Amino acid sequence: MKIQWLGHSAFYISTDNHKLVIDPFMRDNPSCPLDPEDLEVDVICVTHGHNDHFGDTIELAQKNKALVVCNHEHSLYLTQLGLETTGMNMGGTIEAAGIKITMVNSIHSADMDFLDNTRPGGSSCGYILQLENGRKIYHAGDTGIFGDMKTVIKDIYQPEIALIPIGDRYTMGIREASIAAQWLEPEVIIPMHYNTFPPIEQDATQFKELVEKSTETKVAVLKPGETYQE
Image (cartoon, rainbow, N blue to C red; front, top):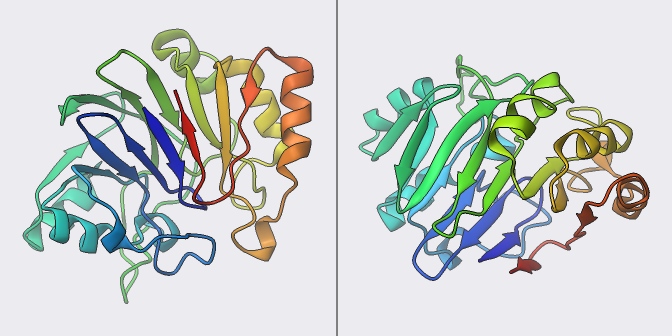
C-alpha cells in the first residue's frame, strides 16, 4: 500500500489492485507536482465543495470513468454532468473497488465555491478507508478538533493511519492537531493542509516533535509528491 501526498489535502492511495484519490486539488495547487492526467484512478473521494478540495474531480472522473464518492448534494450535482457517483451521509459505509468507505463528521463550512455562483454543498466530512488487507486510513478532511475523534473515530473505527490538517486559520493548528493525535492514537500520522498558501504556513517538524513526545504515534512528514509505503 502506498500513500502519496499531492500537497494540501490531496492523497493518492494505491494498492496492487486499486487506486483512489482524495480531494484531488491539483492544477491550481502550487505545491502539487503532478497533473491530473498523470493519475490512473478507480475512485475519487471528496470531503467538501471548496475549490481547494473538490479541485480536479470532474476532469479525473471523466478521464478515468472513475466513481466519485461524496455527500448527497454533490452527488446530485455530478450526476447531472453524467458522472458515476455514490452519494453518502454521515455514518454510512459503502464498498467501492474493494475498499470499504465510511463517511464521518468534520467541522467545517462546505458550500460549493468551485462554481461561478456558489451554491449549498451539504456537510463537510472525513472518511475511514478500510483496505483489502484490513488496514484503516482516516482522512479528516478540513476540520477543527472535535469530540468524535476521541470517541466515534478512535473507539469504533480505530484507524491505524491518520491524515490530519495542521495549517490553522481554516482548520486545526499544530496544538489542536497534537491533542487530536493523543485522542486518535493511530500508529502513523501524516500531516496535511499546510504550507500551500501563506495563511497556512506551519512547521511540520514542530508538530512531529509534539506528537512523538506525548504519544507512541509516529509522524511521517512528507514533501508534496513523496510517498509513505508499507
